[in-house]
Length: 63
Image (cartoon, rainbow, N blue to C red; front, side):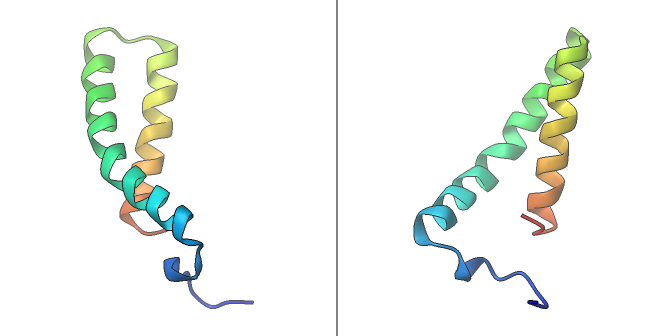
């Protein structure tokens, strides 16, 4: 079993996808937070929770 996560062991297309998602996820999370504050619905809340958790995972390099 590996001891750590190394993103360079991933295929090049997956590394590029991860890089672009990492750049896009934070602005989407902020936009969803603003939308949630204006019109709070259950779907907006669930989407915000999903985006916030993905942002946290990208920030901590879990994904």
